[in-house]
Length: 247
View: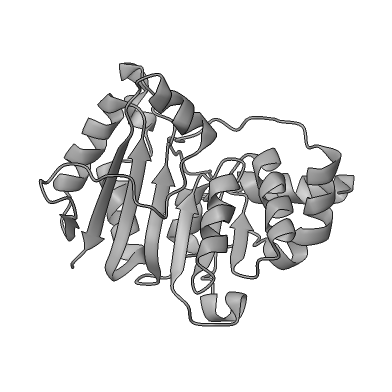
């Protein structure tokens, strides 16, 4: 990736909504943009694969049929990290399309490498703030599934407002799901799990798919990551939640 490409990508990641008076809209971010260094392989992946697998941020709706050249169901994953489990899920479900959003450049580069190695055609990635992408690029009633696995828990009470799972954001996700579409969350922080459950149980238009109104066992389609497995071996808990859009 040359310097111009890198600048353009960073601009794509950092573009903010502008108010009518020309001032940037103030927005509480749920993430900290880490300035990781790209490996040579990740840099090459950006240069070679972004034109076909990457989607640049712009304030216009995505035509998923055109992007994927089919009308298969769309799964959106927000914050896929280094992309290992995301690519594993896409490999196991070739009849579905997967769009991943991640702000950490090395993670996106690693994901692109994995997609190429697996020879997948059902994956596209973005490197931008998911809230802006949802507001400006994702059509309403277009997603079969939204998954957010192990988001930053912002465990200090004074930082809880930065958690991505908040009532307004959940309603934005509901709006993008089809009727019958599923929101799947997972966390290894009990306090955040309780917060998620409270927010989702209070959300209109969504119903908990757990039989007891609480959490669900990890579905087979969600891979058990090395980090998660290490935590389970140490006795740490993991909580999955699934809610379906009914209205």
